[in-house]
Image (cartoon, rainbow over all chains, first blue to last red; front, top):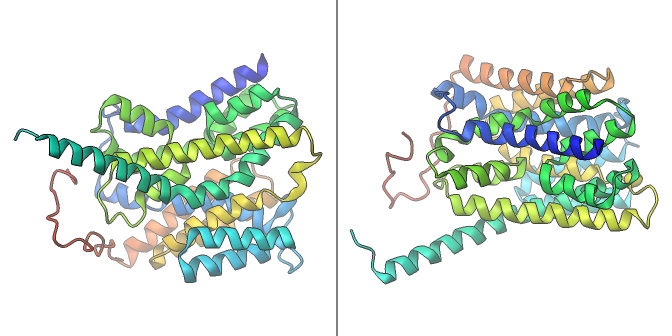
Length: 100
Length: 259
């Protein structure tokens, strides 16, 4: 029962966070400055999620070349930068990761 | 102007086309989310949830990082209150996404606001805002969102089935899929120095917070990164990329789109 309660409450929080500001009645006026500020939200939050996985697996800083997360993330970064191809980047870097 | 049958047919055709274009655009990200979904499904079982509960997490909550973090906390015996506060922190970025898309989605009818709101993930945000050169298309967003939802739930199901048969699925390094996906989204979005500053600040702070085991590290790193990028752009008077929208010069820019 506790698990179901957790799932439902989490679902409400997640949905509310996604939906609330899409409602026109929720009064927020956005200036150009705010929109510019928000354009940084995706790169910032996604980086904040992946960076610890790559640089600190198990919550310990690991900048050595024996850290497969770091090696494969570098490969992914180079692929993403030079090819701009999402699928290629993901497939090759993940393939490499599972080989290492 | 009355619509002729041909016009209606053409309109339906273009809707279907947009829908499938959206589905196609999100396909790489859907493939990338498979290992991640498998991880969520198997980890849920391992945590002691039933198969139905494990699937319900993906079907009702539909938020990968929040699900994985919550499972870790349930496993560690953390109380409901802390789990919900952490969920709020992790999901707060969706408020920012909604805010960024508000001017385009809020004029739509309720059913569109509800469904696109439910489907608003990192991945949908990424494809719906890519380049921003083409006008926001609700059918494109719906196609992308539903495809991704389906992929996420099928992957979770595979994880639940596989988790019953394979021990320690969670130690296979499936979490690299999260990193690969986000790198593939973030790197091409670095189109100007201010975004680079934003990413670097966020990266360093997130790692520092993780090492120091600061609970709200995600929020700290994100907000500081955003302020850093914005601050840099303001100080250097970096141009807001105005080259967007120039790919279809034959089509006049509609004014109602911006206001």
